[in-house]
Amino acid sequence: MRLVQITDCHLLADPKGTSRKGLPLRQLEAVLERVRALGPDALLVTGDVAQDETSAAYRHACRVFSSQGCPWFWIPGNHDQPELMEECHPFHEQLDLGKWQVLLLNSRVSGQPGGELGQEQLQRLALQLEADDRPALIALHHPPLDIGSVWMDAIGLKDRDALWQTLSPYPQVRAMICGHIHQAFAAWQDVVAVYGCPSTSDQFLPKSHEFTIDEAARPGLRVLELRGETLSTWVERVEL
Image (cartoon, rainbow, N blue to C red; front, side):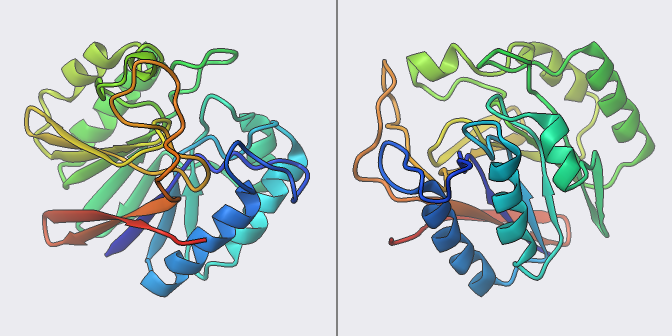
């Protein structure tokens, strides 16, 4: 089973609208060209699909995601409007991938750059894991641990300690993937691997004290391969 993660597209209603470093829709289309070549079984989009929170931006997203020839799934980020997203394409909380399961969490807090899962969602997560002991991959927008950038760590997942406490009885959780950080990242929290992903648009400079664009880094994606009970993963960058 091959999954591809993309994240933080920051699309605009204007298809020719610009970000700090380029054209978000054109950048996304270039990344998706590489995705098609990789032939994934599913595409996971981990939030901040739109920058301007418009229906038109989500329509652009749905058009290009639906052209991939594989199922695709998304979760909202702090810049998103879930109601507008759901008008285009439904949300899913759990994906059945045969020997694996993927659990999709919503860490968005309305009007806030940081994220929170909340007690109700954490209780639901525990029930899902209690009922299914298959290896689990968890996807959410906000990083569940510090990444080493002062400004970003201040707007990560507020209730990360509660999340890790919820997960502690369930050794089937093998990995977590997140968006929000606009950079490649890999770390461990106990026995759980945590991976961040480059944005399809502008990249953030790792280990920075203040908000800083990484001028040299290119848009990218993360590939996740599930073989038996083993997960392997790598990041690919795309030339524009």
